[in-house]
Image (cartoon, rainbow over the protein chains, first blue to last red):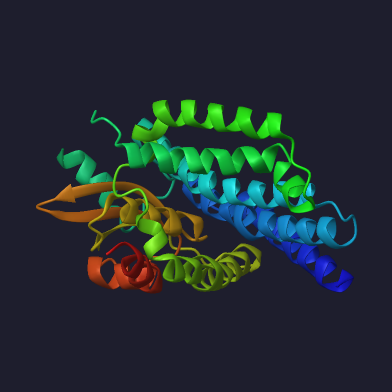
Length: 113
Length: 179
């Protein structure tokens, strides 16, 4: 069981690493947002699931495990809303990628309005 | 804004009360057989007060609808969505780590068949939570709902094809839950 917990945490560290590398390398703000969701999903969920198992099996602390589960649930609920709001707010405020997108339906429709 | 029905208040209160039990640690005490009556009653009063004020923000449609679709909902949450999440995560991680940085970002507009308000929100959030795609806006034109999606690797600018690539299984399952 200890191996499973360690594996979960190692996987989530790998995805967090990939997310950070992506954030540094991606060409514009919106692509960086995309890469950050990589950290936000598996990067966090792996640690939380590993933590739940560890708290329940090795620490015998049910309260802590339940709180961790709730952290995960609230994380999943709030994260996409924040990501959506940042992206949309940025675009409406005038943040544009340096190299123009080949397909940009949102910008086109905004000009028409 | 319309007034909240009594069943909406009830369901909000139940959710609040469960949350209260969890964060005060009482849920563990109940299983061990030694809950504190004072905490339980205080939580009941507070959660009903909170529900009276917040139910109209929390519940917009049928309050207990999700319970009738529980099997499909649980399958979606614990089987279908994690698989999609894993696939998309590996894909974006590989893109970020590969030396050529193979990205072709763009914003596409895809149609959605979801009618219910909760269904639309659930599908949009599922899309945002999957790495590689972020929902930027939802509009309604001539009765048809459209999502604007920022996509890291635009394979097709055609609305229907792009929609199929982005929300394929996600939409069929959210549709199964909400329709």
